[in-house]
Amino acid sequence: MPPSKHIQSFLSRIPELRDADQRAFLYSDLDQQRVDNPDGYQEAQKFWTQLLLSACKQGLLSTAHTPQPRLNTTLASSDEDDEDDVLDRTQPIEDSEHTEAASVLCFERAGLAARLAFRGDTPTGVDGIVDEMERSGVVVEAGDYLAGSTVRRWAGRFVRRVPVVGRQMAALAWGAQDPQITLDSSLVVRSLVEAAASRVTDAHYARAACALTDNLLSMDVFREQYAQPVLTTRGKLSLEDARLVLRCLEDQRQATSTVVEAGDSHVLVKFAMRRAQRVQPVTEADRNAFHVVSTRDMIARQVTALESRVLELDHKARHAIVHKLRQQALGYLRLKRHVESDVLAKRQQALDNVERIVLKLQQAASDVQLLQAFRSGTCALKGLNEQAENMHAERIFDDWADQALHADEIQAVMDDGAVVADGMHVDDDVLEAELDALLAADKQKEAAPDKQKEAAASDKQDTADEDMLADALNKVTISPEHKASEPNVADTKQDRIAMLAE
Image (tube, rainbow, N blue to C red; front, side, top):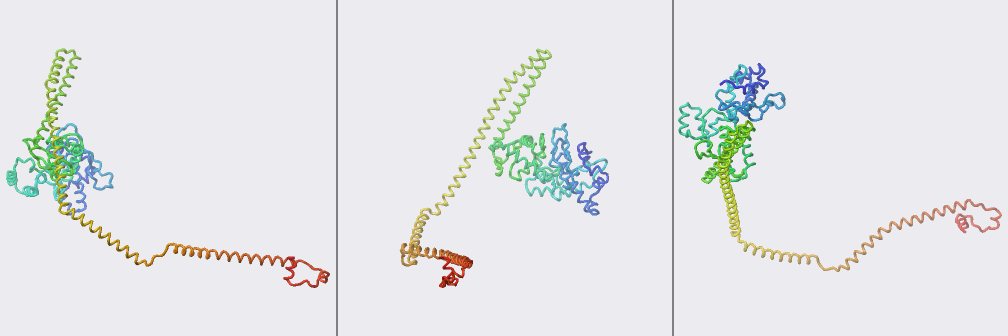
């Protein structure tokens, strides 16, 4: 298959491929490089892995359908510090002409090298790269992934290694009509499927009211309703991607699916009532409720189509009036009146009736959940009551009263023993008098240093006064006549002080 213009535009944005020397290395036989240049081989392996994942995200590697606008994501750079790496700047290819979705979770291995041809060069080592991706678990064959059990997955791996006749016999043995079994050459990218399943789960439980009808979907509704979380754009999820996401949800016990009638539009998809719960198998009540929901959706689509038809007839009538086509305008108005009164009104009435049935089903499902909660609560309470009866509550409380009384008696004995150990009783007045005496003695001890300091200061002051008087007396001069007239005056220092004092 020749490369499409979309994949060519994608490859032209990669600097490594625009450079002739680097492209020659990347498009060469990498198996030989594994021996001659191990480091270069590792870099080429990382480059091709990231390129294939990015192209798969954008739906460029699917051969089942023509690509349409895909994931607005880019490849992870092989070197986070390299800002010029194309893998950080590669943008998805957009083409509004196509309406059918291409797979964004798996890619065809057949003809992959031819689709990746660029400027006349074809990558001869891409098959070895894909083999390495499969050995490392990055990709897995679709038949192995869609198999419903571990035994069937291992059997699928064996069948793919036997001749075509063996594959056909195995397909007949397993049931070729099983929509979950495919033996094509598609390779599923595990990380992309798991991420898509997680986004679908988030989207579902963000909008669902945990009602019965909210968790029952047809395959067509599932593909339309959850195209946005997977594709990040409007459109319709491819059937291959829808089956891959459902398989991942089934492995996580979040959803299950079953065929209620022939055709993918009648595949019943059932989600768990709550995210924390595991999905229950599809019951007959689920099938009947799904039939009612499908009828409601069908009538709703009919009502929408009839309303669009009424608007179209009104527009044509107005157009005919503008061009003065009276009879044609009357015909349009007559047909419009017929659609509105006879067809649309009855369809709307039927839709209202079916909506009432859906509400009744939701109410009944809610009552069932409430009764289940009461039943669970009753069982839990019954079990607790049985445990309490086995523990003999009356005996426990009687024993408690006896032991508490015994503990009080022991405490009383302990209190009496403490009184005896303290000895004779001492009057509190005597103790207070002794305490006052001790306090008075402490106060006297505190006051004694102060009195000693006062006495020392007084002695010091008297000595200073005596010295001052002595100095003054020495300054007094006594004449000889005075001495002769008073021969009994003492010449000593003490006599002079006394005389000066007088």
